[in-house]
Image (cartoon, rainbow, N blue to C red; front, side, top):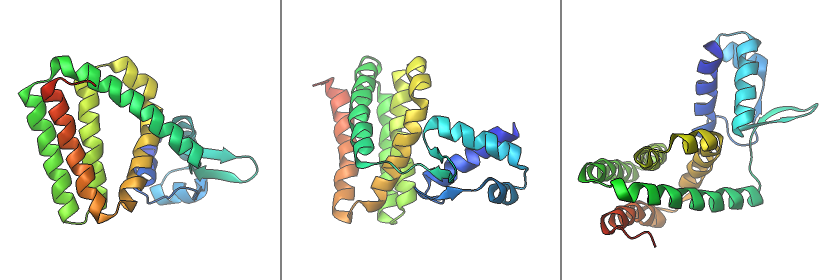
Amino acid sequence: TLSAAIVDLLRQSILDGTDPAGSQLRQDALGDAYGVSRIPVREAIQRLVEEGLVEKAPHRGTFVYAPTRKEIEEICSLRVVLERFVVERVMPVWSSAHEAELLAIIERMRYAAQQNDVHQLHESDYHFHSALWAIADHSLLLEVVSGLRSRIHRFLFEAAGVLPPSEIDTHINSHYGLIHVFKQQDVA
């Protein structure tokens, strides 16, 4: 539907930082920019409110979600729990095909880092973790946490943008460490 297309466009502009945290989203301006009426824009914004990427402030307007320090800590701690669950689900089905797929993604991360392309580095990192979630094959979990994953995605994008060059290699190499964990079947 038209509103679903607007959701995708708005979500992408939020996740890639075009509409940064705290910026106001005006329905009329967005409608003009996308060449649509306010109705699909309003529906799209409501969907993004439900995902946690946008927040409505009564009598002030609608703004891109800007997490507090406490919320960032909560997102990080919950991500650890979810990622550990994913690792436990991936281990029994781990294969050389999965390894090859993930290694290719890591190489794209490394290439993006060499090109100083933070956006592509983040996108590749997101694809790495999305691939793990797909290998884990738990559709109900994906359904339950879909909104949370958007928030995590946004948070990780912003975090990738402020990583100093010395830590980017460490970040990329940590993904090789995860593959080693799968090969060794070492949950701990």
